[in-house]
Image (tube, rainbow, N blue to C red; front, side, top):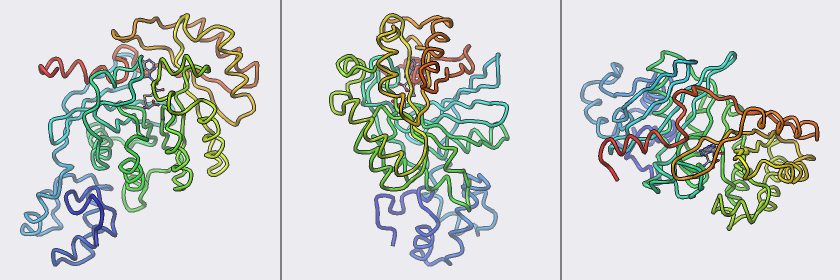
Length: 353
Ligand code: SAH
């Protein structure tokens, strides 16, 4: 039987075996499970009423459990500089999240949200400013991909969980989503092409390793000194940098996946030689990739972004000292509200405070 919280409320949260139990429980043949799963996750027929291989009667029966059809694109903003597109996706209950589509020479990437709002409280991040509303369910993460693929008539090859929310603060839903999206009978996404970004929830990094999920992880570091990092990122008060690095070592041992580190460079805050040297010390003997991000200034965080020259010299210094380092390419700079800003602006437009 379907024995968890997904208990027949939403068919798009269920894997094929669970769907089999569901169809059996309503007196239908088990082969319906594969048909339903493929219709949604492979063919992107999101509304059961469009599934012509089901009788009208059966469609009526399934209608209330087919919730992915209630997700929709509220807004799309196209970059004029490249093919980046930012979406606001509206959920059944009216909550909206941001989803970004990016096109590269060799692949396409979608940046997904995992929560409505965020409770981590990082000082520089817009996603957390209007606090936390709720976790997204697995089907709401799938919906972000399927709606964008249908809108652009394309197939997305890579996923980054770097939109609104802290994915490891919504662990069960995120893992269930990953299992759904990598299912051979559905989207069949390669696990190697999925990257999860976290502010460093150590217990959950270890759990990801133990659960043998096999995705790539990247850690939002942003400052190599605990006392300063804690001021920027309150989660640091719970887990020190040393504990995070140990969890990363454990993750690497178990999965052999190279760990990423993100470092948002903030002018005159974390960009001097002292910081670079400390970073070198922390990262130089690790199989990792450091990704420098230019601060995207937001109103609530009164700091400046560094010049391009500063970013280049930071990167060079790190590479010269044996830390593999890149600068995150800016996609769609003309529409590049910082992560979470679009949603907040939209809330104000709608009069939500
Ligand atoms: N909660 C996850 C995903 C967040 S978004 C995490 O903390 O990793 C992805 C990255 O963008 C994180 O590294 C985050 O710290 C960074 N970020 C958030 N706001 C930013 C801003 N205004 N400028 C630059 N980077 C930002």
